[in-house]
Length: 228
Image (cartoon, rainbow, N blue to C red; front, side, top):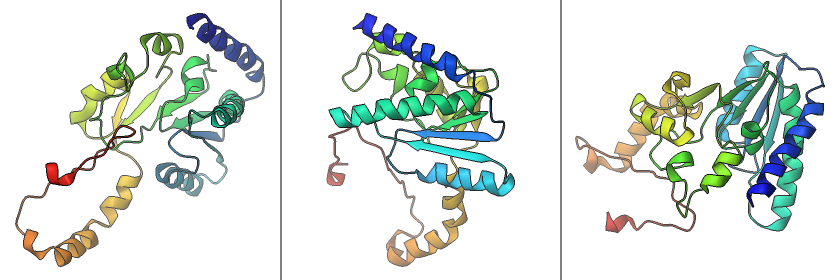
């Protein structure tokens, strides 16, 4: 298995060597996501704002969930090759999840890679925190596929989560930027109206301390609110 993974990594870099001979488009910004097969809210907000600020920006968006059925894996292999071409010719890459080609390839110095992790905070263990566990990757795969390598910037939520970002991505805190995700702006802009509607619906909660718990669960897991 290890030999197969190493050969895959070498093959990808061999192909990428020739793709990097293509000129870099200084206006190209590549967005990558495995969170959905459609454009995510954060990528939509950020890409549209970039074009507003800099109309000459060349936006390329690639989204593909890596499901485990054969057809999906075959499609993801094709999408990976497509992403490799754009990684070789873009000046900036923004991703909101782990994208193996970003981590395993040797990029041009001109490429800046920004990890805009899809969660607003970092509570659930992932990446290097979960190696060897049933819901995590194997140590061998993480090592040979250079998991979460090549990030120049990691967009993070509140500073309290910084140690967990560092542990999950195996990075130093100096590349963390605590600015939050683009969709936070939408939540903040509508907070007064949302507060008004909430208390109008639940007047009995006025003056009480309210805690919102909205976790992302492991696949196949559910939670009975009555059990809390």
